[in-house]
Length: 405
Image (cartoon, rainbow, N blue to C red; front, side, top):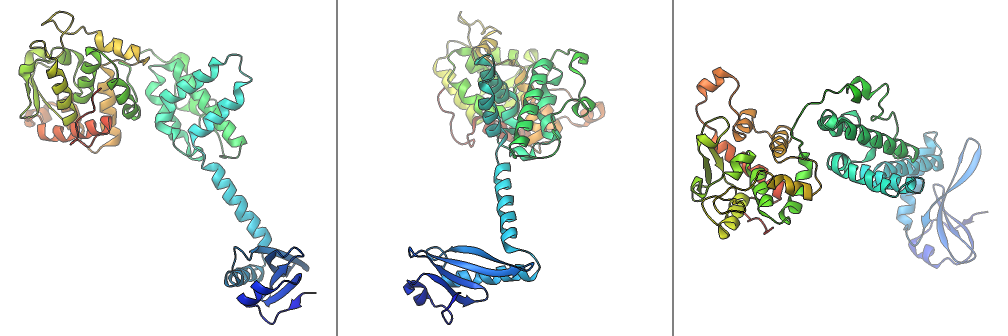
């Protein structure tokens, strides 16, 4: 039988050495074992059965805390619920929530590792990782795997479904496998949002039906911050020209033909004359601090009037120079594609109006009525836009010069 302790005190709890149960009241007991270990017990009856629930060791839970826990447990019993079962349910819910907090990237890595031994080639795992790093991780890699839904899957697939259909199909299949794996491991529940039959086949055209359209392959904008430092360590004039093209969102020929006389450092503007512009209209390009830092580096090795000279003095750099840089980096994108990257970023990640973005790309206004009234080039608004773009791409705050590449 439990021993009466006439209500426990902190002093009694500390000094009791005799093994046994010592009642405090409200179903709370101090349990002392033969080894001297002391724990708190809440004793209660439910459904005609007596049960004991541990409340923790006295080294961790004080008398006051144990009393509070006993009072709360007694309330649960009064409500007709077994507090032990309630605690188990809470612990299971916490464990499930922790399991579901696993990110898509973490789950993908676990899946690849678990399947690696069964794949015929060791290169297969590397191919999976490479594909996911290029197309999936920038958009969903850091997200908890239990929040991946159809819209997020489409955000990965739609930009490449009609331009890289075979690759996109593989990406879809790999995402589907990873999500199935996650469900089996208890990290998510419900239907697989990457499933093709009966789901995505209602949204995307079958890969065999896709009409091949020639687009300039573009890097997803989410990959730009990680791509930029890799570009900066590339050697050669082509890499520097590509940097200018990206920072200014200008066309390849506009960059390759850039002249020092077109650049006004004091006013922080690059004025491209009409004869060098595709629309045949002068284009003023705002120069951000990272762009000016790049131009200062190029000025230090200036060989003539052209900013980017080729093998022969006063001859422009080859239009293949930027492409070769991207090939060395093993990227299946084009220099012109970065204009698409810029445009998508503006649309999805900023609040800048479409007309400002289109003006930055030197696109002519399609609406003739709007064009008739809009005579300016939105230069100051474009300056703010290009500053935001440069900050996103380089990770700099716009006041710090670019690190030497």
